[in-house]
Amino acid sequence: MMPAAAGRIRVTNIAEIPLGEGRLVEVAGRHLAVFHTRDGVFATQPDCPHRQGPLADGLTGTGTVMCPLHDRIYDLRTGAGVNTDCSISVYPVTLAEDGTIELVAVTAELGA
Image 1 (cartoon, helix red, strand yellow):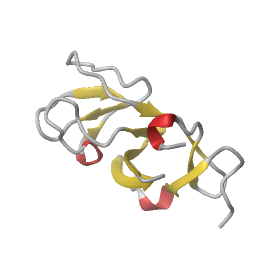
Image 2 (spheres, rainbow, N blue to C red; image 1 turned 135 degrees about the vertical axis):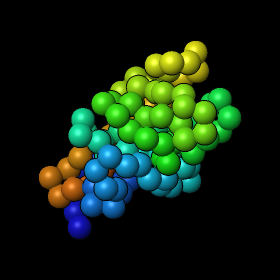
Image 3 (cartoon, rainbow, N blue to C red; image 1 turned 60 degrees about the horizontal axis):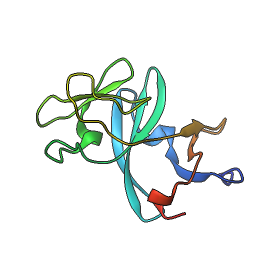
């Protein structure tokens, strides 16, 4: 396995997340929900702000995730709520040639 590129943190490998699903992962001591969709890979905060539903268990759509508890839908690119006033934090990730998903910008929220 290749190490993460400079300024990036390895999150997981794309093979660990089936297409159309999400997984809860720990990065720099914090949890993230990471999604593998037909539109690409995305990372968000782990819980829905409405009632703390586990977003990684949500249903994915075209660039969206639906909270499994109360059907709140969020845009995976921007974090904006589609059918709610709530929004979620999103984190930039890339997919390396070897299948490694890397967190691009380590933010203060993740303890950098």
